[in-house]
Image 1 (spheres, rainbow, N blue to C red):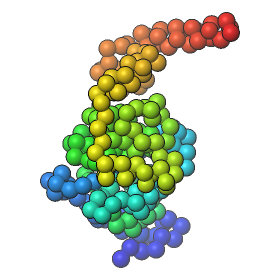
Image 2: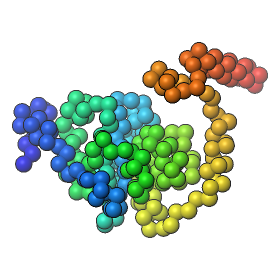
Image 3: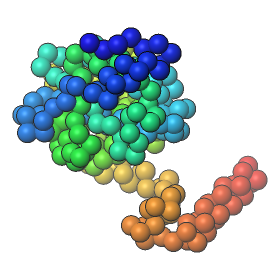
Image 4: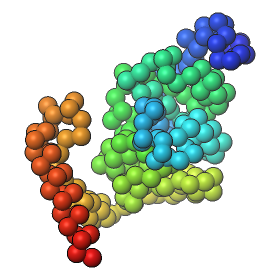
Length: 231
């Protein structure tokens, strides 16, 4: 039995935390079932606060999905690999999720691509898993505001009614999005993009150097400022 948390520092509760999550799922069994996939955000980070508003509380997203998921569906969570849960999420977060009967966990060793392939939809506040899902032509439940919120197959979720409608559409109807819609979206999106590297860790897989990135950004900002002067 999980001990009561007192000021988040009970010795017994910390011992219990090391045993969480208990409701894990095996990938072989999972791919034969019906589920939504929610890879948790790294926090603190702007992708959840402020971009997700009240839904920066990822336990709230989980609770809502747990409440409205149809019979036979589960919500599969994957912890972010960059931090261990004991270091940064807080005990209460995991105890809240442990109470949700339709929530299961999957190992961080399992490929997100594999999990996406078998999912009914991806779930995220504003994470790049949405972009991966778009490229795989998978539906996305988006709880915040990000550049891909207008993409085909993305369901922006602002409240419970919106979530219920999105779940109904994904689970009760046959979603078919013409490939031309994706091509049109990507073409329109490309007019707002520029080459570059945001993080040094991405340099190895980028065709742009840091110097080229700085030049692209400088030129873009300069052109934008000049356009404002002409108005």
